[in-house]
Length: 564
Image (cartoon, rainbow, N blue to C red; front, side, top):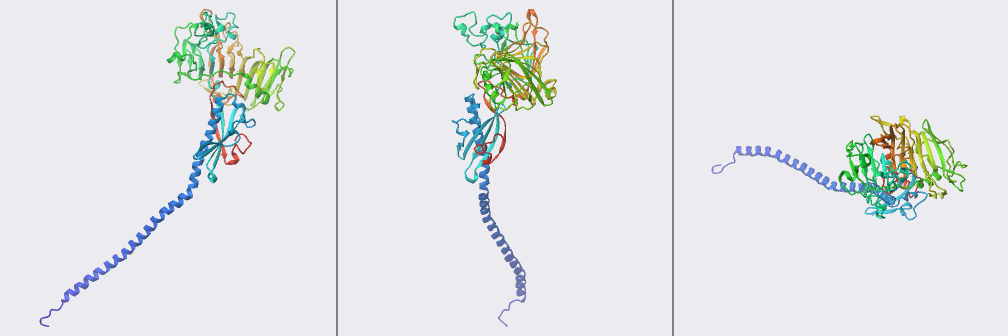
């Protein structure tokens, strides 16, 4: 119609076209928005569930985590028990008498739990027992409360610092007055030889000015000389005297509390009696000199009671009136067994065995020793010994006319061990390095004399043993006069109160006695002869341990068994 405008047909077509294009995109966006919303809801649900899952897992793992912590705490509690026992040993040298069958009534740890810590709660309990002269300790540690409680039980081998730690050990680096008196021409002032280097001599302070104020007299000196070789740790509570160039493959240690020098002279000095104008020792394998703690010998009576209870106690009869007796012991090996024979006499008295009634050992001559858990022979008197042995054996001497079961006293008679000829382990048992023996984990022979261990004057003798002369010395018979004896070969260890002479270094009369070739048996660090005696002042420490198991059934407060 005129005057009216009609919509353009083209505009409608265009609008419809746009609508058709937009509608699918809108629908797609609506569809994608629904998917996004779904994803958001799923994510929110997952995020909400994670803390719940973590909390649930934590709750489930909490007892296990607590138990793991208590497992470690139980070990720490056992360590506290071990340390408590070691402190008792260090404070009382006789504390080793207490065992699972002879408990210390004043120590609650031997009868129940002792609290070591309050947070977390930790407890320990322990029982020591004797293992062929060594101490074994069963100790339990407990930690936690209720169902989370953990108990762990361990067995420790406990040993003291010992003369067995060294190839050579001495208290005095001087002549023994008793041994010096055996020489046809003893040195001047030998009665005053029992003085450490730098120690005030009591004879001087009492007005005898023929002796030096600070001992000992020069004639008392015993020296290491050129040609001597000691392959192993060397210790003395005195100051060493050296002449020339002796060789020490594992160094020198001195515990002399009277020597206040610094540097090398705190450990060794020139030996003027050896004709030295100076000495330059050879230290091999990075070794050197060192000042360490002091130790002193004990008495052989320590082994008397164990011999009567577990080994063989040989004396001169009758039992009611025991007398010292001279015994000759022979050792021979067959396979892995040592046969020990003995015979002897003291006037009309012959060796007899005086064991307590509970000792079931057959202690007749011909005794067989076939393991490291047997073999303790205590002789009331003197022993002469030679031969070959394997296994574990300890020969101990002391002279007494009074046997109480715990002491060896009442007689001033000397009690010595004489090595009549070579005394060896089977060659196949020794580990050799560069031709020298270094260890033997199969054999352990101990020779413990209350007085001296004497080597007969035989050429090139060999001694495989741990030697201990408690009151006197390890020395060679006729050291001052016999020539052409060659080398004294020792594989094991030597310990003595006074430095024993094995020869003279020469001078106008030429050399007598032996040169020394001492090799340390490194097995002695963990393998002791049965009931070997440590020095007083020795600090105890564990050498090995194993875990017996967990639970109350293994704890020492529950089981009567000893050992894992």
